[in-house]
Each structure stands twice: as structure tokens, then as C-alpha cells.
Image (tube, rainbow, N blue to C red; front, top):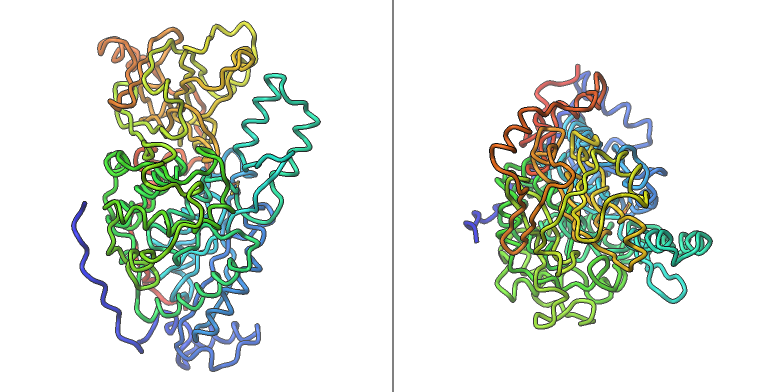
Length: 585
Ligand code: FES
């Protein structure tokens, strides 16, 4: 366990807030700023130095998971008014996981940059980060961390359970299963279409423990959301209450100057990593937490993920690792129950501070578990190995990620012949070919799908198996790539291989027929060729792709970091603070 932070001391109140530089006084500038705001009907006494709260809203009709956030924003506003603040709703860049091409991940960093500048460049004393879909949560947390303006996360909440012919339908997880069943000839296209409607039966984010639910849980475990926020379904009235309570709370956080850097300490990140193991969370959390830590100045590495997660069992029985969905997690007591279990097991920094001003342990110590099949007791975990396994070796000198709870135990130690797909198009062209030279003992290798390669690091690492193998009833094989995988997906899938192929990593020079050995207990990933042969192949390598010449694609390609450090843009790392430097006029 790392060193204890100094206790938080609230700032004196009353004092002048940053918004007073825009709104207080009789100078030409303040009249200019204030006067224009008055065209919305705001009376003069609202500009009396009270906290101005920006409700940073990722609502968009093209981010359907966040489609209900304007309604929630009204509840946040009510809370801010009640506590004596001045709420202003601010639309921010929204990247939907299910719509944005080539992948929403390519835009996480531009969204983070945009919200950072919106927070700093405008008269905002505190922020409510209104988020939901996968990338919206980390991008706003990254932006807030870089300004260090007091901020609180409110997520939109998951959709209600999906049901199809008596079975639970989990977002994403069911899609992967049904599409493989169609390929194997076990499900008709008509039934597949009928199942589609049952997958998304209410507003909200994916109802599995996918990336959205994982990141909502990470925000809560980091202390950046009020206790209990993560699991409340989007359409439950308690979601709206949570929004209103968060609106009230941010006003006091501004008065106390309770900042992201006071909350997101190394201890808080260690709590989040252990929580991820206990909930069977998404591999995407690895990248996002590394990036958030980089913004707030916490030294977090892939080794921390392995060290902290190694002895954490998964106790939350949710898809894709288990059986239930977020609605049932909420009824069982949600994340506070999991945090209490971690605390009882000595795996929680109990004195980590949260947005409530209380410690995380104070928030959870008295909660109860209402369903021990959904949140399992310590002696009946879903799987003993919950944390992420970080594999290293000559194929991944900077590391690769595997989620043991989503993998097949018999494949965790495996040696196989590489079947190489040079890029995603090559994979698509060959995978359904009945003549493809592959059997279930082979290892599928996919290149050029990392942060620079795809570009943006798409969720294609859980490549579907060849139909001829699926028809044998085989549902898992070892797969290796520099891609990500949806948090709703599963399988023995080695992801985020670093350095990526497009950056000249060893993955780029794997050839068909090479032997690869994977040993998860020993954390190793080895391409069985000599050092000399590997060096010779790397010396011959050159980037096969045309590089983008302009626009955001150029910026991304030239400045994005490796997955092993969070895939942030190099010039965005770190906290740049809240000072603008100059007045506008
Ligand atoms: Fe938006 Fe899953 S695709 S939450």
C-alpha cells in the first residue's frame, strides 16, 4: 500500500471565486460579460460572487446512451440552485462508442482537450461532469483533472435488463454471442433481428459490466462521484435524485475548494484498480485510468495494474464474466457493497477522500448486500483471478493486457502456431474462407489496430473465430493484437500489445507459422524466434500505411502515446491549472 496523503483542509469561505473576474464590478469587461448573460433573463443579484457551476453535458442524439442527459441536467440545476449556486449548462464534445468512426477512442483526447479549455476559458468555479457512454466519462475526467477545478461525476446510468425469449440480453455481450450463433448456423437472421429490439429497452448506457458501467464504477471508486452513483438505472427515479444531490454537493465543493487532485491520489487509483478486479471490469479501464492519472500527475503504470489486481477475486456476477446485469447489481446494493468487501479484505485505502468530503470507508461501511448470487461472498467468488494480467516478453516489451475472468482457463497457458492478419481488412477478407489454414490450437494475430494503427485503437481485438471452427462447437481461441476489446466482450484475448505494430513494435514482424507461447500465470508472451532473427526482421520493417497529412488525424497520429501509458496526446499530459492568464478585452 502506498503512502497516506495529508488530510484535506477546506479553503476559507467566503472568498473571491474565479467567476468574479468575469462578473463582479463595473468595468467595461464585467458589464460586457454580465450584460450578455442577462439576455437569458438572469437577475443582477445572481452575479454576486456565488459559485458558477458548469454542467458539462455530453448529451447528443448521436450518442444514444446519453440521450436522456438533458433531463438529468435539469435535476442537477435544481440542486445547484437549492445550494445557492448559479448553474449553467454547457454542451461539450460527445463521442458515442456505437456510432463514431473509425472509433470513438480516436476522439477521447480531443473531447478531453475541448472540455479542459471550456472549463478554463469560461467563468466556471465548479463542474458537474454529465457523462455515460464509454469515452465520455474518461474524457471529461481527463479535462477536469487538467484544470483541477472542483468537479463531480454524474453518470447517466445503465439501461434496464434486456430480455429475449426468457433469457437476459446483455448489451454487446448478446450481440457477440448471437452473431457467432448465426455464423455457426444455430440462429436465423430473422431471430437475430427480433433479438435486436430487446437489447436496448430503455434510456441509458450498456446494461452489462461493459466499459460504460466499468468507468462509472471507476469514477465512484476513485471518489469522484457520490456513493451509489454507478449502478442506478437510467430510468429509476433515484438516478434523478442522485443528479440533484450532486448539484447540491458541487456548490459546497467549490466553497471548500475540494479539487480533483485532492481526491484522485495514488491511493484512489489503487482502490479503483482493485475495484475493477472485483467487478470483472473492462480492459478499457486500464487505458483510461492511466490517462486520467497522467493528467492529475499521479505516477500510475501497467505494473500497478498487475500488482494491485493480482490477488483480487471477481465477486460481481455480471455479464460478460457472469450471469446478471446492472439492474440486478443495483438491487443487490451496487458498488458500495463491493467497496465494503474490499475494505473488509484489507484491499481498500479506507481513508481515501471522496467528493462527499467523507472518506470512502465512511461512505460504505454500513451498507448491506441484498443478493449474494449477484454480489458473491468472499468464499464463493465468480473467479479467483479478477485483476488484469499484464503480460510481457519479446512480443510485448512494454506490456499487453489480458482479462483472466473473461478468458478460458484451459488457454491461459498455451503454445500455438501464429495465423497472421496484417490488418483489419486482411482479417475481414480471410476469416470466412473455408481454406484458411487454421485450427483451434492456433493463435490468431491481428496487426495495426493500435492507437496510431487503426487509427484510434478500435475494439476489434476479440476477433470472431472462423466459421469452420465455430461449427465444431469451439467458442474460444487465443487472440493477440494491439487493439482494444469492448468491455462487453469475452474470450482469451490479449490486447493493447505495446509498442503497437504501427510504431514498429515486434507485433509488426510476426509471420504466419511462427510459434507463440502464452503463460498467464508467469505473465509472459513470447514469440519463439531468436533475438538475432527478431532484430533482423525489425531492421527491415517500415510503416506500411500512408500517414495522415492534415487535420485531427495528423495531430492524433503524430502525438498519440502508446496504450501502455494511456494513449493520451503527449502535449496534453499533466495539470495546467485553472488560470486563464489574460482577460478577454
Ligand atoms: Fe454507449 Fe455502451 S455503447 S454505453
